[in-house]
Amino acid sequence: MNDRVREFYDDLAADYHLIFEQWDASVQRQGAVLDALIRSYYPDPNQRPKVFDCSCGIGTQALGLALLGYRVHATDLSPKAAARARAEAERLGTVLTVGVADFRDLASQVPGQYDVVIACDNSLPHLLTVADMEKALASIFSKVVDGGLFVASIRDYDRVLQEPPCATTPMVFDGEGGRRIVFQVWNWRNDGRIYDLDHFVVEQRGGTWKTECRTTAYRAILRSDLSELLRAAGFSEVTWHRPGETGYYQPLVTAVR
Image (tube, rainbow, N blue to C red; front, side, top):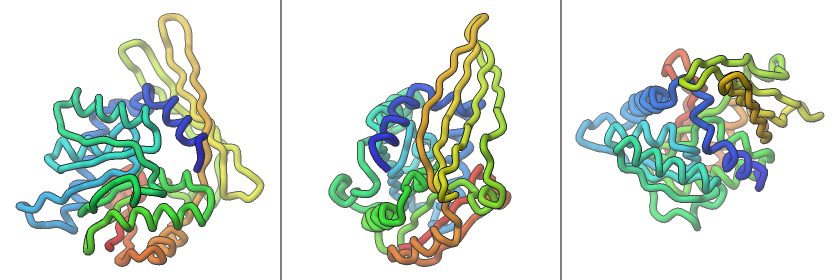
């Protein structure tokens, strides 16, 4: 992960909501799913766990939890994404503290520890080397209280790697200003695990179409490999939760410090 990732999300921040059919509804839906998962580990209704979203983007999950009454601190590598999350909290009338941090170095950039740390939306696979993943998980581990919970989501790379795709199915949405089309083109490198992703948002404006293309890179990681790395970082009770069980759009993994 390097400046290219930060630049990708800086550039995407203003348009990030366009990848959802209805972003506000997605915020509420993802918050509800994560709330149910967190509550399975913290069942006491009088206990409101303190949450840290260490890869918040423009706030999709952090805002959803804040709207449910959680105390949430959120950081992102991208200053523009973090600023957008702060603005969205104000728009939605909820409380969210926001900062800028690299989740490979949270110990020096974010004070304190949290009951729950989350890293969703396939953020961990931006780490293209095992060394960087180990560094990030050790950093995240340092922010979780003893007995606390880590929650992450990644693409279903176990399925993806069975027949690596070259693109995603275009999604077509109708908006106030016209239609928009969202899709990705994947360019696999020779190792068969890292791919460069071209992210397209095509918007209809009046009688013309505007195309935005932004590029970043991911490393496809198997669930078993991430589980092993989580245990090596010191986590236990590593458990995978499939979309059919949770209603979340990606596989979720939980781990306990």
